[in-house]
Length: 326
Length: 261
Image (cartoon, rainbow over all chains, first blue to last red; front, side, top):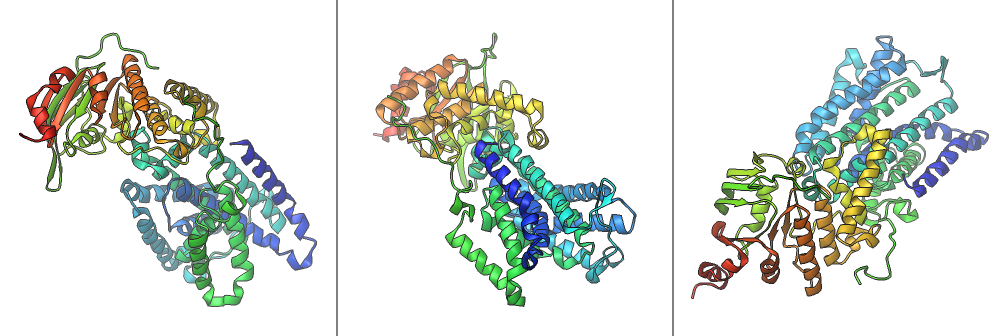
């Protein structure tokens, strides 16, 4: 990745690393640490979604369902079958990737917004299964007795510890994605987004790439789901329904679709908005989300990053003084 | 660029009774034609003659309703566009189809896609093989940029270039796929006289490099100057074929263009 991106990467890394030490001593905001754990978990989902939406131009309304597949696989395997959380995690990720692949093959071979339709239906099906398969999922009353993560034999029970586990994963995911984007694969994804027919004619197998990036997003969402499970140690189907898929979309859109930094910024912001400041609206919360979506779509289509120019706007280019032909 | 084959096959492209229907409209009506390798083959005809449809059928964007298309002796009908690109046919588009927000160099680097392999894992984890592949892509893209004379614009955003340069860039991107056959769809459209002249020279250099060129073009001066063979289409059918000199004097061609007397 470029120099500027490295700069932002290191800057963000430092801010995230010192954040707990700044908020912990202040009683009134010490619970921000807990909010930031969730923000980190959700960031993994939105980074994957940003790759899909911002770079491959496809919309998914099933990210909460993949998040749920990761969460429940971890939950069931650890609480019912005695798996170690670290062993359950890859199982959930692989299950989620397999499902995304099966879903993506028919939906992404077609041109247009079939993926949005297919994922909308799929998300609803997953919610139904989580509610109805009571003997496995606990149904609407939820599922408990889920163990916490251990690192090097030590259980991570503190918020502080979990915060660092989660955010390490976020930075690794970011690094992975930036490397992908600054390569042949990333150029192919951007090419698909801009001129699909030309990309195909230049040898880019467009359908295959769209499926792969969709599967990648599902993998990140499942990883996030697993981390979520072992943090809250209690699962309830309501955390994985369509409303949450829309929230993930919103996080990416608020921050700025065509920038991973935008996804991160939007997720942190929307997590604070959701966890801290929207409770006053109670059941009218969804109206507020609708309003935010509308305002962003109309006034700030490239998201918040376009305001602070973290890469949401077209890159600045050197304009030569002559037209180069004389 | 690409090495010339010692013994080129006698025909690089063979069209056999190719038909293309869109609902009730028949854009190509049983076209058969052979393109020998190493030449500049122009395809001309009045608007609606089926020229662009023919290019779409050759590059897999349309699947011909019936008929066969052979490239270097292998049937390519039914293959997807990216497979045909990998087989060695590249193209430009009538309405420039660049990746506008990407840089000039990145556009050409996308052209290297079908000659490289690294996937998500290799690029995300930066395997050693991937890094050297990226270097190769860059070097190759720079040489193609130089070939069309756009080296000093490498880092400019493609969408900000004037049309003439965009057309050159599109040709460079197509060349980056290492084609044996390149299809240029109205490359001179919108160009001024000097740019058209430069384009003519470029097309001849491409052909000298061992790549067969097929050219759809309305600029008759350009067509007559640089083509070895001209194919004339009229309402999706073969009307005439021959050298530019032969074509110019054919009565049926003149009628097709000017209307019957």
